[in-house]
Amino acid sequence: MRVVIPALRHVVLLTLAGVAYPVAPGAGAFPFATEVAPSPVALAMQSALVELSVACRDQGPGRAAELAVARGFSISEGCIRVVIERDPCGEWGDLSLRAPGGAITGRYGRLVEVAIPIAALEGLSRMPGVRWVRLPFRPLPCVVSEGVALTGAEAWHGRGITGEGVEVAIIDVGFQGLAAAIASGELPADVTTMDFTGYGMESLSKHGTVVAEIVHDMAPGAHLTLLNTYSEVQLGQAKDYCVQHGIRVVNHSVGYENTGGHDGTGIVCEVADDAAAQGILWCNAAGNHARKHYRGPFTDADGDSLHEFGSGSSGEFNSLGNLNAGSPIWVYMSWYDWPTTSEDYDLELWGNDGTWRLVRASATRQTGTQPPTEEIIGYSVPFAGQYGVAARSYRTTASHGITFLSAYQELGCQTPAGSILQPADAAGSFAVAAIDEDLWTTGPQDGYSSQGPTYDGRPKPDISGPSGVSTWTGGSGAAVDSVYGWGRLDLPLELGGDPAVAGAVALMSVSPNPFNGQIHLTFELRAPATAEFGIYDAAGQRVGSVSAGFLQAGRHAVSWGGTDEHGAPLGPGTYFVTHGGVTSRIVLVR
Image 1: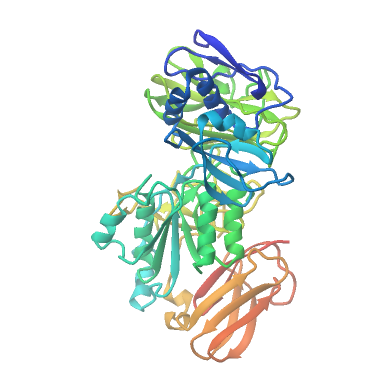
Image 2: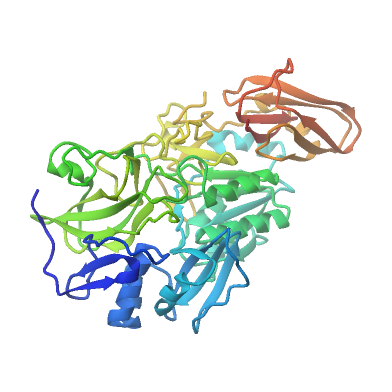
């Protein structure tokens, strides 16, 4: 295989980072994958941030800021947004940023989001208690749709079941056009808004406004709270807001990548699981990445340290297709050695305008305290031609499973199975896939819609909803198994019971959820009734029940121990508990 690396003007060596960066001349300079052995003292900082530190030191803060903007990173007044992962075993006082102009922009658990001058990044990574400094995880908006008539919701509306008295939160990544949607009557004027990003509600994207219109169409009587987020720290803050304000239904039509092992683990999944544990139904889009996902064991038969997707020299590149100059690239790579690792792989981007050449690399040094991830994000390709991504073994002792996910381009080598994004793979998340409205009654699922199972073998998604319909803001859009989940969302009156009975149940919450042992159901009857709850498995079969007997109006509680009709323990998995047409999703773990 013939490859070309552009002529080098000089080689920058940031010794303490343990990485030598050959830098090509010109304004579009970028690092390549030539490396030296890591120093015993390595910067606790992501590869992309090391690159900015080098640029700042050698070319000045202005040039570093230009490079950051070109990469799509959040820069304001010379400060970049980053996330600090605290050392859970170390001392950690109140964070004092040792740089003029630095400021804390958010906290969640052991994560601190800060805005800091690029020149101060290296010093930040050396502060006591700082385990890792990285870019914030960026959410990937997922296609959503309405489907009032298709799902049967109109019949419920006609019987007066519209979500009246229910609080629903829309956690999303931008609400552009919100004021216009309210003025036009597409959204009610009494929506509550909260911006956690610092950029303003009507910033970043119109995605959240589109989602809010869909939810309002499905449940026109519900009160909507719109929460604007753009990182995992802000997502956690939004979840805490819902808990504090008694919101028990969340719609999150957004996904993340490289935050966990596609097995329900990682900080973003922890947010959804904690929401479920506190009685919140967390509904999450499964993702649109069935054709943008690849997984497989690292294979290197020819010994050149590059993973082989197929035979021949081009088989070492997973194609992104023929791209025009300036096309955006957001590609994520991880390997199965979570949560932290000393097994070190690198991610490379290659382009071919007649000759294959390396144009970009992510080469974070994994020394035992870093996650098994690399990513190339916010990158614009420098020339028109064919592009592909590659995985290089830098310092490994065994072959690990490799995962690729592309935000924009479909991959030449695809693995639809397991393409569920985070936190849709969380046990506490109710994951929704997509079926085109024109194929609603027949299928198949939309080819782009992410599929399960999760990497640890759990069935996902949980259900499928309609896509390819329209909204005022967005215009026209495009038995449990790993494609459909339970199947189509359907709300027939004859299966759900008389809505008038459902209206007798003013409140129903379940906790803890997920549970192991006893789960407690609390509810409020508006009229005297027999409180018997049916328990259904993921295939829709009734597997158990729990009865509190005949009760007067008022608030009551009953417990269930995860057993079937005969008292035998049920296996772990997703179940549904129903009463009078009101249904809650519960997760049993063993």
